[in-house]
Image 1: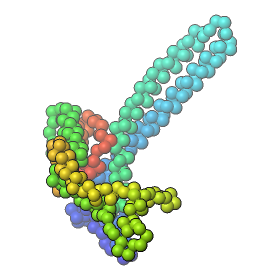
Image 2: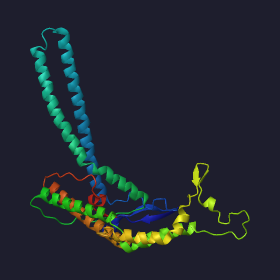
Image 3: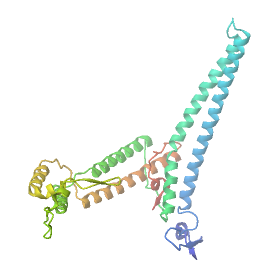
Image 4: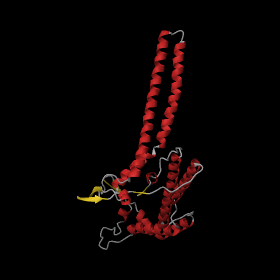
Length: 316
């Protein structure tokens, strides 16, 4: 490996920082110094990870308080049962149980808040997985500014963008399930028939003296070779014999299909590109609204499946 100088994305803007790196000897080795993300993106991710960790800490702390309340209640009930078996819980015991019940209610609320907080930062795991893949794929990211947004109602506008994202996801699914055009279906089906028929075409051995110049018995048989079944019981032969009938039947089947929304491979690829482009743009607007809302003192949880590029504010 040869030592080289690597100029980070930030340095290309400021001109004030140069990092040392390595040129890869093989494609599998990293061609950057430490991290593919620009500093602003790393800082943003670290803040989110800190918030997630704080939520986890709050959750486990509340769980411990709940277990402590359970222990205290069990002690009170056990003590009262031993000392006042006939009388039941004493007034002092009832006061303690009421106090524990109030604490348990507050603790339950704290657990629910912490759980909601953790759900709101579930996207962090997906972002980190994406970064790990980016490292593996030798991707370097460039920081880009979020689009400017204005809003009188951040929650409403975020919901509107999310509806747009959901609609684009439906369009993606529709493209995935789009039928193949009729002419392509027929061409592929006929080619499939031709391949099978060609393998089943009869031939006569000119030198056969065993009374079976067609080898028909073998064509119509199956046999076992180890754990594998060989032979097709004459299926390819019958396909060869019935080739024209099968093609005619394919024509009838194709004519009867509902091919609404059919796409060629090229059209489908173009549709995927359009949807991906529009979805990322929408997710950048969503992130811009969330960041603006946070600056205004309003926290809006991010979706767990947010595009990491939108959250990290990068082009990669």
